[in-house]
Amino acid sequence: MAKQDRAVRTRTALIESAAALFDSEGYELASLSTISERAGVSSGALHFHFTSKAALAEAVGQAAVQRLEGITRPQVDDALQALIDVTHALVRALDDDVVLRAGFGLSDSIERVRVAAGLRDKWQGWVEDSLGQADREGALASEGAAQDAATALVAVTAGLETLGRQDEWWLSHAPLTRFWQLILPRLAEPSRLDVLVASGSKGGAPGL
Amino acid sequence: MAKQDRAVRTRTALIESAAALFDSEGYELASLSTISERAGVSSGALHFHFTSKAALAEAVGQAAVQRLEGITRPQVDDALQALIDVTHALVRALDDDVVLRAGFGLSDSIERVRVAAGLRDKWQGWVEDSLGQADREGALASEGAAQDAATALVAVTAGLETLGRQDEWWLSHAPLTRFWQLILPRLAEPSRLDVLVASGSKGGAPGL
Image (cartoon, rainbow over all chains, first blue to last red; front, side, top):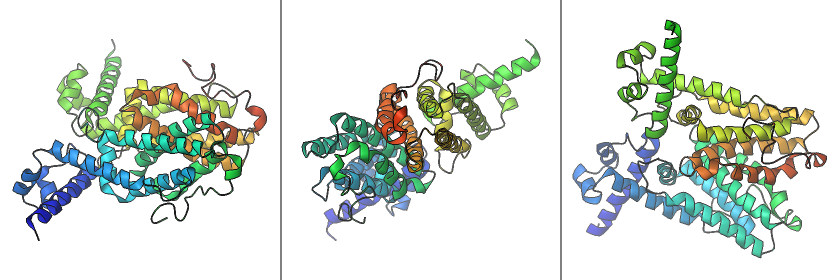
């Protein structure tokens, strides 16, 4: 393996290991020695890549932003269906992807870790942009409903994430599908209701 | 002051102090010496009342359950309006009441503190009971909408709590009012829509 490849792999392993420990133990209790040990990396190698635990948290936050960018790349043309699909993909990723989950967890830490604070803003921005696009496509019942829906969606996804830490059911398709069933008749232009799939469209997001 | 009164006051001061520190620093970092110092109580008195930090967390959880019970005592006869009012009261309390906020925070701690785990279940149960009552009053558009709304409400309130830790706007009336504006036309029997107040009714909860 080329030296650079190995460096990239080591760095990635450390980020994954840190994310898993931040997620299970919390940032404060996670020790650098456990992170390097579980990554199968020497303590010296860890310090070569990251000067502090805060630097590792920053890297986890950046990796989480990249994961989010991957998820918010819509696979269908219809902006409203794409929004539905992406919310399902996000919730599934919060269940599966420890880096994304740790990133959101870090962004909630008060006064301690300020990294990854941009993660929620990015998500909110993307939701608002998608609803704006759906509005331009004539897919919405009213402009007011779009603003209300954006606020509700950001709150609901944050809530599913929080509740899912204790009970994985909240990160299954069921609760989010119920939410979409509830709001779609308010949000969508009536003629669109027959084609929109509240549980996510097949082509909408990988793995649905 | 009678001896027993003083004991009750000391215990209450310790619970408030612990809640404030759990909320700001997290359970793991909160030290018993800081808790007793900020409560204006000696370390010996703390240990007289609570044998461990876990016992203090348990007491914070129980106090939070009592606060929740106070909030979920509806002030109006209409079950659906009472539900709206109580959600606003809960969100305001999450902003104002550090014991309640710490209780919910502790209930999210994984594998470390299991106390107060009943807090979310109690809230969810109350929401479901209220919607059942509203259904019996003929106030709902459909039974399916009630189930979807219960899930959405539990998720939204958990989300507002999470988001409010970084940005208090989420614990203001605005986002919750937007949510109710969005779902009421789906949830409520059409003839009720004119009388329901999405931002909370005046008599509905103290201070609204």
